[in-house]
Image 1 (cartoon, chains in turn green, cyan):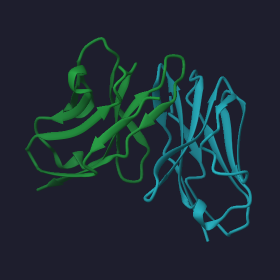
Image 2: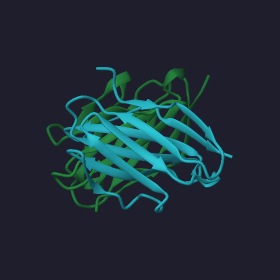
Image 3: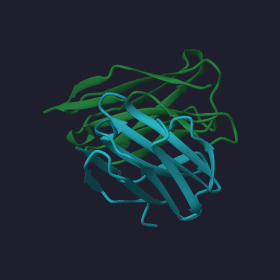
Length: 114
Length: 111
């Protein structure tokens, strides 16, 4: 079964600094990879999705993620952090084709320092 | 589309009572998921339906939990009897092309 590991349960960055949230997937190449964001007292919201069409995926709110097969990674980045980016971020991977179940990572809480 | 709709948004009940959580998925989505989120255990998948049929219920904690999807536009998650350890935020999500869309959640408190 597919799995993802998120490195760092808490990340703090200064406003305007680079945001880097790490995600590694299990060794077999996954069909799809996702990043979701959860703001306080809300459900998870899809940020972006990798479908093998392009290794660099752009999402909403200026976020992007790069699929690197050699490193089994799918890290999330944003060039310049904004206070509104403070939230919890989840990496997720799909199961085999035909099954729409996702396996979520344990989440990374992003704090923005003014 | 209004997105995934869940009701109630908040539920406070006493131990031993029956609790029913409701979900209306996005029209046209074939898959529906129930999750539970707590600080201690994170996000847990409870059950997954495809075309109204339960496909994977391995995450349902015990017999006190049951879920139904009588039609494509409605699902329920029932806890009977409820216990304090069931206190959590319960999310419903529906999906299309592997993209899951989450509802706002129901915050359940069992006293």
